[in-house]
Length: 327
Length: 255
Ligand SMILES: Nc1ncnc2c1ncn2[C@@H]1O[C@H](COP(=O)(O)OP(=O)(O)O)[C@@H](O)[C@H]1O
Ligand SMILES: [Mg+2]
Image (cartoon, rainbow over all chains, first blue to last red; front, side):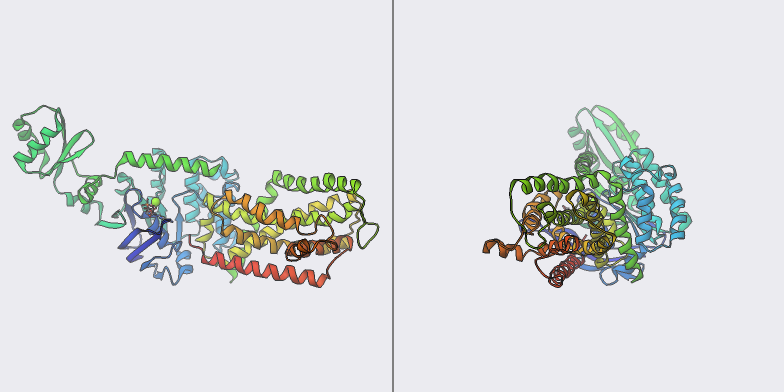
């Protein structure tokens, strides 16, 4: 459904330097699957989406969507896709209904078809009661739902969602995931989404992990977690440094520092733990075993975390910028 | 092709809808020319005694009335076109740019939307005709409406070209001070252009709005400096060039 081959995008920055936003990514997305693009801020997710949806011309490389080439047949590509952008893109001075009407018209839907679909989609995203209100009066979550409804209105084969749940409350996030799963089941739509939330990426059938413009891993969530192998032991000690040295010396494991404790991989966590605790010669505050998460995969492959705190920081800046833009 | 026509209609309809909904904008865009007309116009016509070429009955107020309609069309057209910059800032432009219609259709839809809005705003100004002693019959209105659309179209296209160079709404002051105000002052809207010093006369004659104002003046008070053919020729050529530029700029744009 989507084939990307060695897609690259360079931007010219102000001082003549060149930013390599996407450094040659290749991947396939099968019809009807949810494909997750997981990576930290600035990894090149939005740039990749913009190339796939014909908003940016690739510097080099090729992409086919629904069999159409993004540079040679942009019209056919646009007809096949629906989009939910990362940043807001509604006309706030029109009502919810008018925003959808505009979309239906510009996508060439007939009047009758358009009106029927608008009613259907508005009730799916639970905005039917607010359809005649100006978007200006909507909350962030309502706007997001309306944008998703709009992206789906013309019944696209592929839906792109760029960080669809960014900055939303957990309840709205789970609602949105409800719609997505329902869509996939009922309409067999292909979904391409980007996120930097690890738990969300778990909902995908396939995941590409992207960092600094390059895909560092590709596979199913389970397949990726198997790359980490075994279990993760995490522990907090009175002296974390001493604990790390002990683990390295005694077992030869690779120890990672994270937050206020340390963690390392072992093959069978539950069996390892009792003997480990008996052996230790230092004070342990807490210790536990867990299955590896995508976070661990990311950490292992890139050597750094998708740091939630820095993400939150970026989000707050972005939210601030959005507020300013809204003026 | 049919989807491009539909796209043009959709973009046009949105501009119209937003215009009709925004009452405060209509009021604002009406008050400004009326202030010019009533205060500046009355003040100057009483304070100075000059005679005007052509119709000897025409007082200063009557003379500037079509010029003020031109001003109203200029400001409304450019302002509508500049809303593209606003659409870009709030992200709505992306929704239009990924739609399965040609970029030229987006530019044309926008140009038609802006000129229709400008025509409406110009028509609002016709209400004030009795105040300045101008009689406007149905025949005049029927001639004025296409003329206002025609002048509005060339000015909106000019605005779209300007919008392509603007990164943010902050650039609007630059457009205002370096394009709109000079165009207005140099258009002969407020003074006759027959007895100007050479340098001013040249500036006035290279200003396309001069011919637009002249056109409106010949339709409202049958007074004109150039022939109607020259007026239509200049405004039309200017409009064609600007529309072509607007289409080219939209087609080139990424994102
Ligand atoms: N229009 C642009 N001009 C210059 N640099 C850009 C532009 N768009 C994105 N970038 C840069 O490209 C990189 C990738 O950005 P982006 O694709 O937005 O990342 P993500 O969506 O994963 O957060 C960043 O370093 C960003 O600063
Ligand atoms: Mg992004």
